[in-house]
Amino acid sequence: MIAFDELESGKGANQIGAIKRAGDSRWSSHFYSICSLLRLFEATCSVLESIIKEGSTQSQRGDASAAYKMMTSFEFIFILHLMKEIMGINDILCQVLQQKSQDILNAMNMVSTTKSLIQELRNEGWKIFPENVVSFSKKFDIDIPELSSRYAQGSTANGERAFSAVKIVKTRLRNKIEDEFLTNNLLVYIKREIAETFDLDPILDDFVSIKERRLQF
Image (cartoon, rainbow, N blue to C red; front, side, top):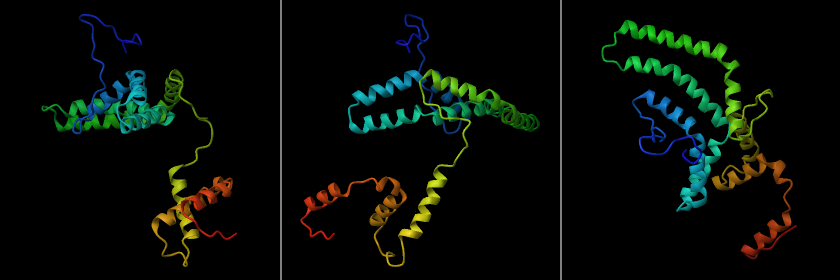
């Protein structure tokens, strides 16, 4: 942050700039952790890029690369801002419930108020929220998808496609094939539009080079 002129150096200057660790038993710590990550987003990405290039082990560089790829995705930015909004509302309730002198009536009123604020966020907050996410993404050159396009489910769709493929590939005659061989067959079938573009000759040459076999065409 000093390098980016976001933090002053020198005697007496505020040098507190670490990402706060979220605690298991204090929900407020999760909110503060999200806020600090948003505030230190650029510095955090720079640290990850340094680890990717100069990490002492391949595992360390791989973990940093995976974290950087996830952090610089629009999905991560969207969820990060959404959690900030929701936990910012819940943080007030958390602070009240942690007070030892809190009475049950006031606590119930705070729960009701919190629910109303979340409902208000759901009804009215979406007018400004996407603009904030897009603005943040543009600031750090993060690819922004077409938000007006029709949403299509991803993981669910892949799962349904895989189950359908199992019924086709694992027939009665193939019922006893091993899991690894079944997985390979499913992968080729599910991604058949890619597999159809493969050139089989190099694959056959590699297969022969492993062990001499008689090929039948």
